[in-house]
Image (cartoon, rainbow, N blue to C red):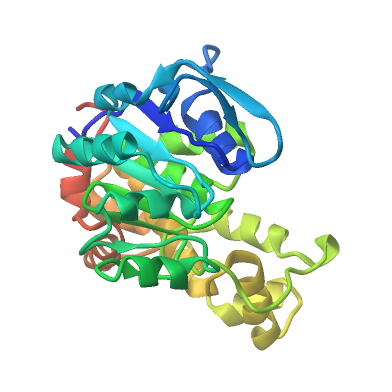
Length: 319
């Protein structure tokens, strides 16, 4: 069975950004006693000296724990911070100890700079908000900075891009630790899409269409018909668009191509079936639209990093 994260510490410094901190508080710090299927975390903010911490938006937080709280955590999640502020050595040491003892460490947006100061990005692929990526690479030349992706999960160190990508990375972590159903349930509670692959681009060149022009109906139809064969031409016709316009608008709305998105959704559905049912892999492949176990295995291994059979042994509810 995978590691289970139960204890979460979020270090905060003066200049912490409210939205990115709020993401971590919403995902890991909000109790949901009405739904026992969702994990309940032992969650705490911590800082160098307990007391008020100034938030970038102009208000104060009162933080009760110091950085010794980091040593208890299964997950240390670092929100976005001002990149010019000095980093307390107690925080950097706590992050290093966390990685050394096998805890998960993650950052949201410019929180990656703290991980870089701690030496945790050296030799690892990582990311941050695309506007900061050049600076991150210059300051930490041993880091392999990828400016295009939403998040990177690299050997216990998870880095994410700006703002909403912190939600994507957090749900990725929930999915990895607790399974697809838990992640999807939490996403529904947060009224956010349940799954965007980390490798999707942070931004797109085309503007997002106005509400009346979105492809939401087409996307809903695809999700309800994953087992069926479908081509870009057929989907474009359903959306009453030319294939070229459909592909351009699809990328504008989702950040990826129609076939890539379709494959990702089929993999996500396969993960849920492998977790929750005893259907043979061949049947799962057919139900999600891959047609054969070998095709499912090919795409599943490329995206998830393991075979369907191994994934089932790890995540099956019977385990």
